[in-house]
Every structure is written in structure tokens, then in C-alpha cells.
Length: 113
Length: 115
Image 1 (tube, helix red, strand yellow):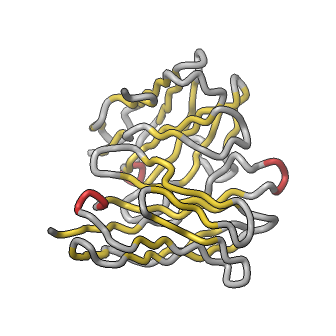
Image 2: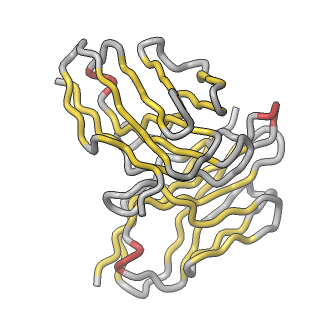
């Protein structure tokens, strides 16, 4: 049974057209993360939510935003996608901050045309 | 800052061969070290971990020993199976500044095991 669910699996958008990726979890975990993984590179943390507390990484572009309307859902919004934003986007959860085991979704592969 | 370097892939082995995937790290503070595995079409999942020097993490026949003196956490398995084909990620967290929730990953190593 999937515990961290990302939809859609593949997303195609146009250059400059806003796009939203979604993540849901059935684990009731406090922390939700968004990672960006480009081809042959390490997953890179964009931001995370600790409950409703949003924590942005210093080098995350302003073009990337996130929303967490409730414990179960978290969204990644890309306001004006560029070609360089094409990547796999990974959502993950952990029980609490400092809890070292992360649970990942299968990811959403974003293409920008 | 923290960083993880793992051996370049892809790695291709025959079934029952011995596997080593090298991982070295640089970190402030006292890192915890992890190996995550990503099977085709699935999310990353924790394979094993070690939280202090000389600890050995093990799971599903895989092992890795936390070597502080060489800043390494190499992944090994004595006899691989076709079902071990996946991408393997080395990762770390540190307790520096309360940011131990943040995983720093290596680039991943693709392993393909042929029958």
C-alpha cells in the first residue's frame, strides 16, 4: 500500500506556464519535503514543512513555492517553469524533525516544452 | 558544508557476484550515514544506516561500516541477485544547528545484475 503518493507520475508543461505537483501521505507524519532530482545528479532539497512551519532552502529559486493545506497534502507550485526546471520531483515525509528515516513517493517527472 | 561522493555508475554484475559501491563524505559535526535504494518505478527507501563510528548497518544481505578515519561508508553484498538491480544512494545528516532533518545525497549508482 502506497504511503506517500505523488500525482501525476509524468507531467508535461509549457515554458512559462504555471504547474502544480501534488503529494499526499497516509502516515500522519509531521514533516513533508520536496526534493528536485535532475538527471545523474543528487536529489536536492528545495524546502520542507514541519507541520505548518515552512522552511525554504537558501538556494531554492523564488519560482518554486509550496503549500500544505493540511497534514496529508503538500503541493509544489512552479510559477513560471523554465527548461532548466525539467527534473524528477520527489516528495518525502518523516515522523518528526530529526527523525532520520524518510519515506519517499515515486516522484513526478516534469518535462518543460 | 556537507557532501557525499559515491562511485560513478553504472555497475553491471552477474548474479552471485560480490558488490562494492564506494561512498565517501565530508561533514561538519557527527554525521549519521545512510544507504537508500530506488527500485525501478518506485520511491527511494531506506536500506540501512549507521549513526556512529564503527557501527555496521545491515539489511537484506547488504552491509556498510561507518569508517570515521577514512570518512567512508562503502556498501557491500556478498552475492547479488537480479532483484537487487536498482539505484543506490549514499546520504548523510548531521546534528549541526538542529538541521539533522536534512539529508544530503550522493548522485546515486545504478546497479544492474544480469542472470
